[in-house]
Image (cartoon, rainbow, N blue to C red; front, side):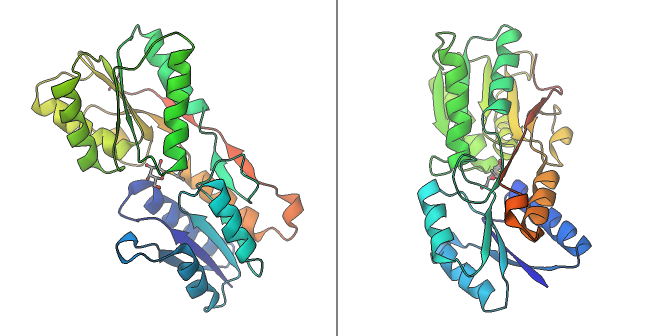
Length: 267
Ligand code: IPT
């Protein structure tokens, strides 16, 4: 038996960790995994990928691509001959999904910094076309708005360390009055750390940083990164279990919690 995984770039740490875990849990259940990575450069569509998998007799597919609810519903409707489970949609979307609660981790990280006395926040979000990125940003903003605080600046990166590096340089140049930077993922946080080191900004003494994901490397950043931990291995395990369940009704969509892990990049 074969499961399909349609995924966004595996150059990104979180999706590659998910792919490794999906493969592990599928194998344990006696399934093979065929992976199709969407290549944005050649404008390959998700439907092309699904068709490719269908031609290899795949009947159940995990889709780890950031999708708006309408787009995910359309994919679901157009592929009723197979079972699709989504990992990166709004958890309230009606499609079959296993996703993280986008609000709890973002809120916890902002509240933690507020509790430490921070008032001047720079927000470095992921790309605007990712629903998870937008929901994380929205939750930071809501938590600040409840206290009447406006962020010093909001910048968008593309999830890569390089974009985190250049975004942090831009912040230091244009709006340097922040004491904390909330970052949409750990890879961008890695770039932020590098830019601050280069400009002799002490972390956490002058600027605190919180990432998002808690991928395997994050505890080994310097300083060790405080971050919102997503249990990507659990998400993969649940996704495989949901997809392989005989009766779909027995395993409806599931929302997983995210939690703050405090390390050394905050004070
Ligand atoms: C999400 C990661 O948090 C982010 O770092 C980036 O890798 C993104 O995926 C790529 O699409 S995790 C996703 C399951 C919401």
